[in-house]
Image (cartoon, rainbow, N blue to C red):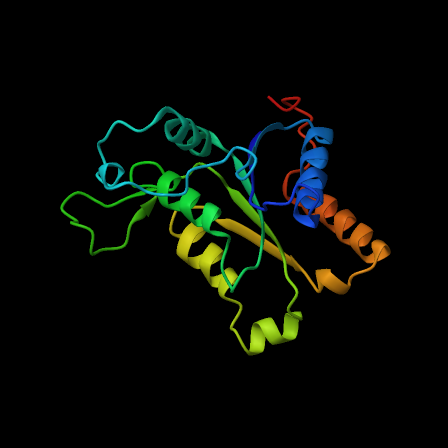
Length: 204
């Protein structure tokens, strides 16, 4: 099984990096093929230029590579902090440039863009791991948990991914070492549940 991990946090010592590493380790343990992108480390250009908006265009090599990878992924894991109820700008730019028409979704013939698109992604499962410093109850009751709506409804459901799971770890800023270790075990458990060991294909 091919699984893509997208990490978006500027500090390479962050708990987000630990989450991504835990997910990566479990996927490799389960013998899956993994493509890993640390967007900040790669200095991903988040700006969508106007020339990339049309469907049939020649994309820059790095963007085409991302598009090709996400097109063949059987599973997707996204890791990022909750900033103002949104992903970091670099990750939003990745969505803008990579989850594009013809790659992640399309409109039916005769639909000029006002209808409901058809998802194109091959992935059957998407997992999002978030960190936050807002208590979960306040996130739900005061802010309406916008990240859940964004990733589940606005992105992955629209792009045809049938199974979605999201876990938010909070409150990180006051968490203890033992709490964080427990969260990392939870990450591994979730990944193992949704992407179990590939015995038949040995990860290929």
